[in-house]
Image (cartoon, rainbow, N blue to C red; front, side):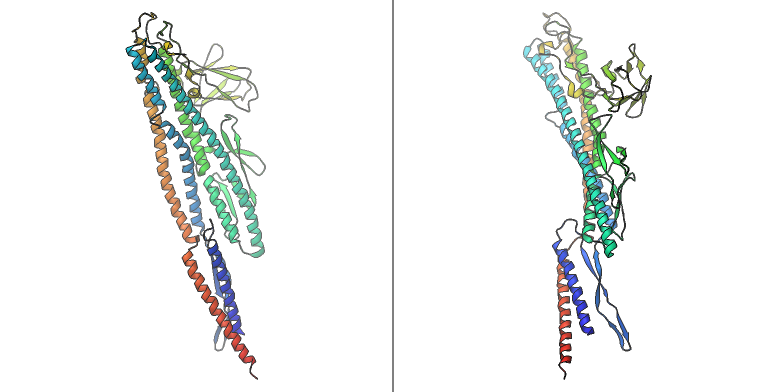
Length: 544
């Protein structure tokens, strides 16, 4: 009878082995599947006076090919790659726009001076004046187009931030559900379901692509707890905590991310501390690259328009009239905080455009005084005008209405300049080329020379318009190039860790085919043992 028991244990083990191998082969192409291995052990035996007789083989379990360290490294590399990619995809669009060598702001700016050069030889020529007028329009249109593109990128970034937050929340909830199911099955059977563990790991990989996470795993039950970089819990056993996006109270154009705790309280995330994952890359782009590019573009538009207006006002046009503004420059518009308790507003005008800085100011009413701080933390002490206006950095801020203590406003003096400038003159005859009101002095181009000199004037710090634009293009280009290089390196690092993971957890079709052949022979051999046992048993029964 012992021989039959031996054959039975061998057949059972062989069948289990063939089932595991068959499952591996079936899921060889299933994303995230971890190879399973049959664990066999001796079934014990008994010791006799002539020696030890074994009871055969037993199935000790089915083990999932898994290495927690390697999986953690894969998640870390994934987080880094998606952070760089999210950042790169957005900033490269600015690079493509500014770096367009056939149609950009600098080329349009140069076109004005080429047409004014033609005017210089014949200031009374209607054709050359109209060509210059057209070039002024072309430049303002280019500024407006670039500004719209940057605004579109801001909206696109907000949309992607919303989607990223939704993906994180979905993963967190699914992980909490899987934790509950895994722990329930483990408590009932003492085992962990491999398919759920694979699903758990896929969700962790998906979440790590969106945001940097720390994973704590219970190797016995398979439960995972997930926290953010700042220690806030996203998944704690069967409980999930959500993130939420809300329009900023200070600037409704910005989507801010909040963490919702167990009591339902919302806490705004410090975006400067979240730089990993796609969400971190989007934060970096929106809060640094986009802000810098927009400020520089608006500053270029503002200072350029101001220079043309200033110089044109010194001369006389083709009709002998004093020159006026070539460009309309919109006044800055402060943004009232949504939480303000009064309906007070601020009227902002320029007092000296040359002194205007491209920076955000937060203006808060403290009662009775106003407090002004810059985005880089500096405290501004304004002069107080005769009508109570606040005078600082080339602008005048006049409060209207009755503010309440705590009311605040966000102001960037250059914001909207690129989008808002448009040509004020209606035709080329209003270009003030002459220094004399005498319309008979047709060849007078003294003021036109002053207009041409704007090309080489240092209007933004110590840089000319062309130099400032080139610096802006170079800065964006360097950032894009650096990100592209880092992205290539990060991709290779991730590929290396994925290879390591595949070597541990992946299914090798050739190896499984060898195992299939081996267990088939194993099954056949034990079947032969069983056949032999039956033959012996039949022989014994046939003895009379």
